[in-house]
Image 1 (tube, one colour):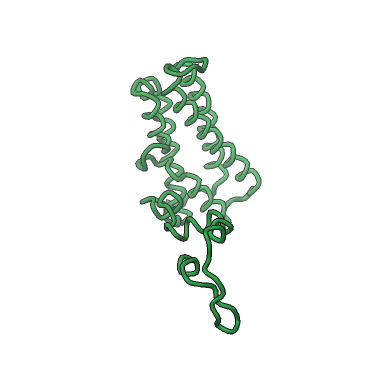
Image 2 (image 1 turned 30 degrees about the horizontal axis):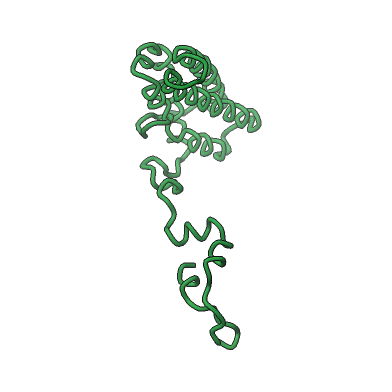
Length: 186
């Protein structure tokens, strides 16, 4: 694409017609920007150290580790949030890449595609509910970071209370998802 924008246009008789203009480039939209500048690292799933294709057993292990993480976070919730909203977000996999909840959507997709799930519709619904609850808890934790210094109403404690409720929902959804999977042979 970049070469096409730099080189003059050529008709069927190989006669140069005109150079591409800025208007031509803008008409191509965002695709032109990505082609000229290279795809930003944040757009590429390969930028993540854990963004790899998972097999069903690795995905199941990630879900089981995620379940243990959620349980641990809920048991020690006051200690986690005492360190701030970003600590809760880190535990949920939204800050950093160390939590097993990081890229849990990829693990769920691998399990859903593995043909091991008996009730695919229930699995998909619970998957959506889990991801929504995790995102809501993340949004609450993020808001708790800034509510003290903003004109918004509320307190960090109120946002953390809401995040806790979302995590209880997320844990129930994750338990339901694990129950829908066949028992592991290990």
